[in-house]
Image (cartoon, rainbow, N blue to C red):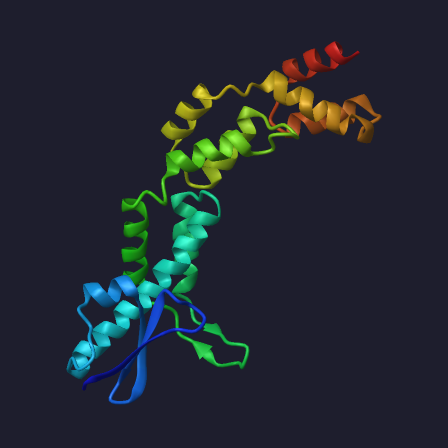
Length: 211
């Protein structure tokens, strides 16, 4: 089997289509093309071509996972969940079954993302604490619960919550200012604030200060 054509893709200029014996066989990004030493005229066995197809699939998956990770910081659990979904079979618009990727490929992608620093629970937790409900307000307890649900370790959560300049008193004032008009009943308003993770004493103090 001989490589007879290597052409840049029309839709993605960072990838090339590789043809074998005159027929399209797989696509690779330029880095893979160089790392694998693929050139016109190279000859491969069928077993070797299957390994190259696996590398092609790995490259596509890494590109998608990298794009997902760069949209905003994600926790390791979120990225693992994203990659797990890629292992499941799906259907195309035409109703055909698209096979999921092999789990070992998702493991490789995840490990590379972590090694490159694109997936980091401490960076993610810091982003979450600094930006979550910044204008609307969010209690420390609620932030802690959300990060725990995202799979962040308790030691990281406690460390970063201890370092943040956010505090419940200020966050509570934000919510009271934003939500007060929706709750004319004082008791119901207090119950709402308690559900947001604030303590009864802080709620009473903030409402008394408002009055």
